[in-house]
Image (tube, rainbow, N blue to C red; front, side, top):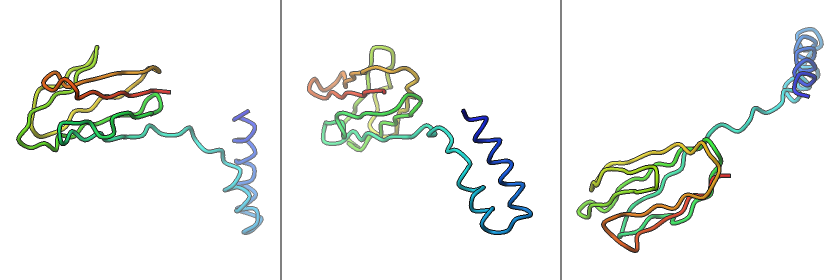
Length: 118
């Protein structure tokens, strides 16, 4: 399906060089949108909480946790991932598989979060 659209877009682009502004506008609209690029998301660690606590993302997206409790150390712990314990800085993970990932801070028992990857 994409080949037909691309071929049509190439033909319209060629026509645009000869046919004026109307053909150019058609050529620009005929090119299909690429798959959505991977997005980046931020979760802050502040007031002994993850914010947002639950995040829904797409497969391939990157999540970065940013420490904002400057005097309180935290970490981000998953089954397969573990950040170092720190008071400032950040930690990033790119999620390549669909699923629900729960995580927590091992220092503060009620500090938990969830990432849903679609």
